[in-house]
Each structure stands twice: as structure tokens, then as C-alpha cells.
Length: 352
Figure 1 (cartoon, rainbow, N blue to C red):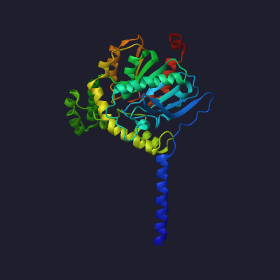
Figure 2: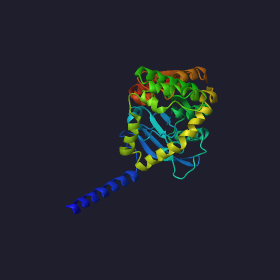
Figure 3: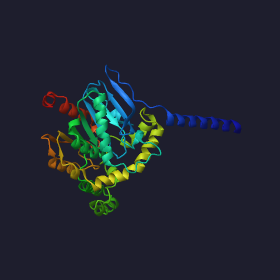
Figure 4: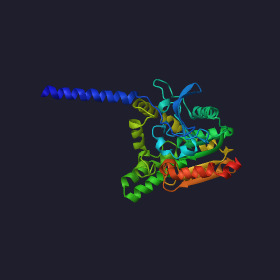
């Protein structure tokens, strides 16, 4: 009987090892879209002497192109984003890429310690040029999310000729003002919940944040509902890593290694050099799309930034009433309606 049990355990162990190996090394792909002239690609492309992972999806490759710049830093959205952009794929060709040293663009053993926002901006400009040539498009709609807005705002200002419009979702602004606003939201929520230990801890952080030495703690922002309200982004990542086709487990290791090594320096750059000081003019239509309950990036600070931003006459501030930091996912139907009304209706097409 004992030998039989050991034999069963042995076979179970072998099966688990095989499943792990399959999870680590299985090929990755993005599912085909079943329509005429559709496009669905997941592959590497060489940009500025490095290989970056790119995903392109749309029901008609001739549709207007939206190019997303992910946040984090180092937090690719490719592992899970497909379920939130199914509507967008009907009317737009949607492009995502993993930034240098992030996700599937991370190479084990490579040194990314000197990578800065300016490197990411150069990569974004180059990948825009590549996409426009590859898809035979004159211009694309540029969308930054969270930290991605830091990169995208600079690219939009530097090369407005490449883009038809810029959309900042969870837009960065004056970093200290934004972080203080987020801290105060958490303190008020903790007071309302009667969590006075949290109130004391958070209040003690105010001086360091005001000096630009710290960020509002993200675990408390999540705790009080100022990160995501309608989705569970952490669960989305785990599900994508385990069951999605775009990432395997080795890619998940790349993802976490990149975040562990690269986030802090890039975040401190946004604190030391706020985007509201770097970019004061964009000669494009500019739209800031913010969730009402966003505590990762402050809607109030973003609105103030937009008011002071010079350039094109079109500058619109859009609030999604039921969202926090991910309005494009938390209210995907509303976001789809908004982006279609803004960029596909006759009024926009006759003006631009």
C-alpha cells in the first residue's frame, strides 16, 4: 500500500512539473479577430536598437489607430487588456507595446538602470513612426495612462505632427499637489470609516510628501477605493498570467523583475521633474479623462494643469462618475461611446 501511495505521489509530482514547464514556456499569441481585413498580431519589433513587444488588434486595419502607452512604471497592460477593448476593436485599430525594460520587452541580464523618461519618449516617437508606416496611417490618436501620460505628454509636445490628438487617462500633473490630494482623500475616508490608526499614520506622511520625498501609500489608496472601483486589476493580472494567451509564466517573471528594478527611479523622476513644469504647450487637441474617485492621480490637479496648458484651442476635461484610476476599463461602454463620439463623428472628421 505504501509503495502505491509513493507511486501516485510521484506521478502527481511529474504532472505538476510538466504543467509548470508548459506554463513557463508555452508559445504566446493574441487570438484572431474574425472579420474581413482584421489584424491581430503579437510580436517583437526593433525600435532604437532594442526589441519591444507590440500587440495590434482591430476588426479592420484601415480604421483609425489608437496607440496606448501603459503606466506603472513597468506595468504592461497586454496580459489582460483584451477583455476591456473588445468594443474599441470594432471601430479602431488598437496598439499596445511593452516599454523598454518592461514585461515582454524585459531581457534578463540587461542593464536598465540608466533608462529614463527621455528614453521612453524617444521609443514612443519611433514606435509611432513605425506604426504609421506599417498601417499606412498619416497620424494616430495617442493615449497615455497613468505613468504613461508622463511619456505621452512629452511625445505629443515634441512631435505634434505625428498625432491627431492626445488623450491623457489618469493624467499626471504637478506631482506633489497630486500626491497631497490623494493623501487627503485617504485621510478623509479613514476618518469616515473610524480607522483612526490609519488617520494618524497617513497624517504623519504629509510633510515627507510635501517635500517631494515620498508618495501617498498605494496600499491605502487601494484600501479606500481610490485605485479601482468597478474592476479588480490585480486579479486581472493574475488571471492573464495564468490563463491568458499573450503572456506565459516566464513573461510574468519578466514583468515582476522589471517592476522591482525599474519603478522607483522612474517614479522619482516624475516627482523631481513634474510634467506640468516640463510641458506647458501642446499644439494638438488635448483631452484629460479622469475617474471621479482617482487617488493614484488627482483629477483636481490634472484639471488645473489642463487650464494652464497652452496650444490648441480644444482642451477638454472629462470626468467618469463611477471610476477611479481606470475609467477606460471600469466604464468601458461609456469610454467607447465617448471616444467614438469624439473621433468618428462627422464633426471631428470635417475639422481634422
